[in-house]
Length: 109
Image (cartoon, rainbow, N blue to C red; front, side):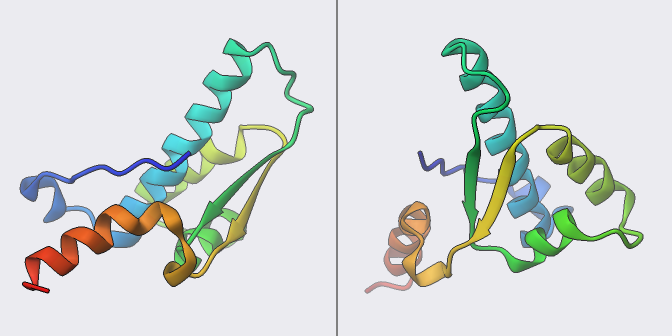
């Protein structure tokens, strides 16, 4: 499943792109939890989340000190059992197609 969201301009001033990508990872984990409950799958069923943000992947895997906003979201992500995060390059990430279409229209191509 892919999900595209638009960030309001007021929020975009406070949130950096890596933080918005982190919020996408949080939403994916919440979706996995909800799907497991709805389909009566146990938490032992593995789930893989593909993400094109190496920054977010490093935040999820790090044991170093990270900013409070990031730490709180990473903590929520880590609470979801049996979830694996994997990297997918941006140019091969089909979930990014809506943003590429928007970028090309905005530039007039």
